[in-house]
Length: 433
Image (cartoon, rainbow, N blue to C red):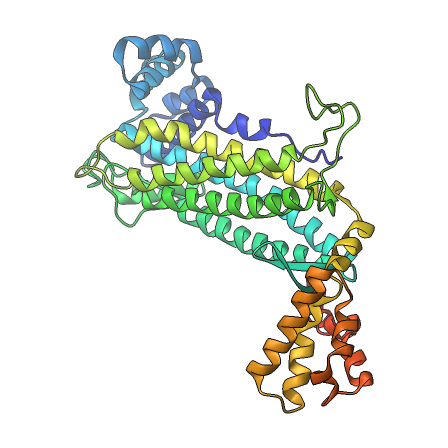
């Protein structure tokens, strides 16, 4: 079982302790710029650096009275620092602190999600090559189509997860900005040069232009990247859920020692982790819709977005981390049943060679529509009568007129059906560590 990380890592980022700690980091970066410009005495600055702190319960107590979280926070900091706290929060507004800190918290959360997603990516590629030659039936519309190999499923997931990592990285770049531009973004009390210096200390870039807030299309992009990742994880989970159905049973989620599937039916082994992933993916998509709404605010800013953001960002990152934990465990320990995969492949008595037979007839000069009708008729007879499709084709008098038995037998070659799959895998050989 994998235990490379715990979801509590994300919890640490979005805790009240860390939120206030990040606010303080931003405040101190701004104060340091004032100090470097000679606006804060040396003794005062050293005192601030040494004593700056806060008490969470005190902040909440003050907020209950003043109904303003940043004022409550600053009041608590003042109680730690004393008179020199007058140099803290100089020339800035609340959302210079809150929005810049939010960017830092989102960026750190994205870094964690990206690292977890990279773990999944490596597992998928490893499993793809492990099952490179395991022949399975491909399905379209839920119906048997033509053979694939089981490894192809993993390659498709691997490639999509790779794209999602790039989306997460782009979102990280987009959100790695801050703003210290004042109440309406016009730098009336703190110049752009100061913003640049303070943000450099936090490894952020300044927005080229802002209002009282960083514009919410940036945050919307983060939520999109998480929702997109969730969709990819759900795609994997949904495939496992289908393939674990009793009638199919090609794979099965790992079932741990002591695990129970039902309170009333002891025989049950359910795909609960994959079902959980499907449910949480809906939450990520729902939070994305809130992100779209949050982008539309009155004038230079209203606060209709802030209450929702207190929910959607911690929840989205918690959900993404939890989903990744589940899917990594499932993918690393998935029970794959080759005998059942073969059984399902043989279920339709080789009718999946129908396109090969159709192509042979057309190549031999038969009109395509006539050839299609003949092959379809024989395929349906094979399916309904549960007889060998190959045998029925060999006995068809119209086909016998233009094709030899040897030519027909050559069509029924599993190796030829899968001949090009090796070329697909060759595209991914350089991805292997």
